[in-house]
Image 1 (cartoon, helix red, strand yellow):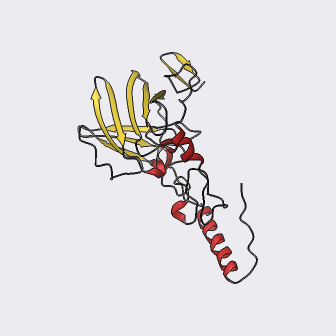
Image 2 (tube, rainbow, N blue to C red):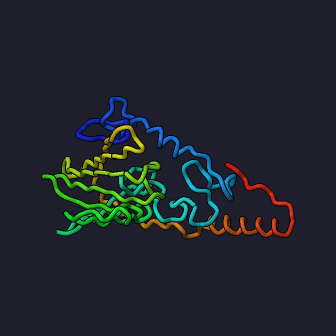
Length: 236
C-alpha cells in the first residue's frame, strides 16, 4: 500500500491510467536519455546516459553536491524512504513549503506573472492561486539539472493541495511536457498531519566523498603527466 485517500488504499500514485503507469515517453525523450556520453571522463563513475560526464565538481549530480535532496522536493514533490515531512506556512502574499529532505524551501508568490523563460532555478518559477478550497501552484522554468525524470525545457507542473479532512491533505500533480511524454499525466497521494518534529537534514557533515573523488582524479592526472601507468577508474 502506497497511500490511502478517502478510505481507498492505493498501490500507485498515477490516477489517469487504469494500470497506474506513466504514459510512454516520446522517441525524442528516449533518445535524449539513452544517448552515449563522450569526452573526458566518459568511462568514469558519474558519466551516465542523459547526464553530463563528471569531469569537474559542477558535473556531479546535484544530490551528491547537496544542492537538492536525493528524492525530489518538487515540483512535483515525491515521497522517499526518509525526509518526507512538509511544513506549510501561508501569508497573504506567499505560501512556503519547507521540505525536510535537504531543508529545501519553496517560497511561492500568489497571483503574479511567471518570470521570463531564461530565468531558470533549481525548483523552477512557481506561482500560486486559489481555486475554491484548492491551492493550485503552477511551475515552469526549472533548471536542466533538476528537471523531473529528465524532462525537457518545456516541462510544466500543476500541483493541487486540497484538504480531505482535518488531518489529511490530498496532493495531486499534473506533469505536462510534450517533448518527454506522449500526453500529460496526473498522480496523487496523501499528506498526513503529524505532531513529530521536522528534523535537521545535515548533508555535507562528515561527507568526504566529493573531496576524495577530486583528489583521486588529480592524482591520476599527475601520474599520467609524469609517465607513470594510470590505473583505470572503477566502473559500477
